[in-house]
Length: 237
Ligand SMILES: O=C(O)CCC(=O)C(=O)O
Image 1 (tube, helix red, strand yellow):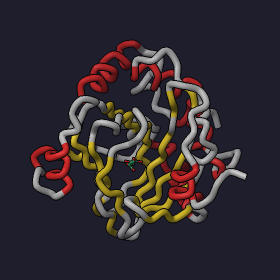
Image 2 (cartoon, protein in one colour):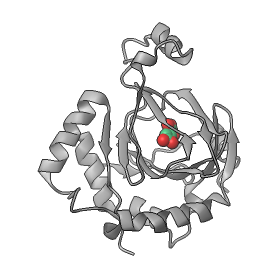
Image 3 (spheres, rainbow, N blue to C red):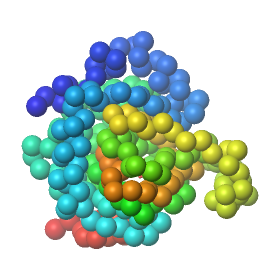
Image 4 (cartoon, rainbow, N blue to C red):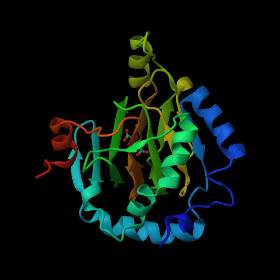
C-alpha cells in the first residue's frame, strides 16, 4: 500500500503552506505540534492489527520506562508503519514544521522506528529526552490511564529549573501539568529536551500502541550501546 493512502491528506495536505505555517508557529511557541486525525480512520484498523502482531515480539524494558518495545529491524518489509516512516513526503513535512531544510532518518538500526506497547501496569516515568524532537503516532489508547502528561519548556539551556522539576516529579505542581490529546490517528511532533513528560500507568486489557519515528538534523546519528542494551536488550550484529 502507498503510505499516502494512510494519511488523511484532505485534512492535512502535506505540502500546503497554510497547513504548515500554524504548526510551525505552535511548535516554536510550545515545543509541540499536534495533528489530530492525521491517519485516516479507515486505515486505523489495519494499523492496529499490525501493532497487535508486532506486540508479540516486543522486548520488555524495565527501568524508568516499563513498557514493551518493537525495534526498527523487527518491522517486516510489508509493514505499513515502516512504509510510513520510510516515506519521504512525511519526513519533508516534519522538516518544514520544524523549520529545517531537510531531515535524515535516524541511523540507529533499532531506534529509528519503534512501536511502544504499554500493557496493564506499564508506565513511563517523568523524563527529558536526549533528542531535540520525536514524532509519535497514537494508534490505540488504553482503556484507562496511559495519558501523555507534559510540562512544556520547564527548563532551558541556561536554566535547569531544578526546584520546579523536582516539585513536578513529587506531584506538587499539578497546575503546570497538561495532558496532551492523543486520540488514535494523532501525529505529534514534540521537543522533549526542555519539556518534562511522562506516560501515566496503563490500566485494562487493551494495550496502548504508539509508533515513534526518529529523524535527525544530521545524517548518521546513532544511539550508544548502553542505551541499545537498556532499551532493546541486544546490540547490532
Ligand atoms: O509513548 C508516548 O506517547 C511518548 C513516549 C516518550 O515520551 C518517549 O519515548 O520519550
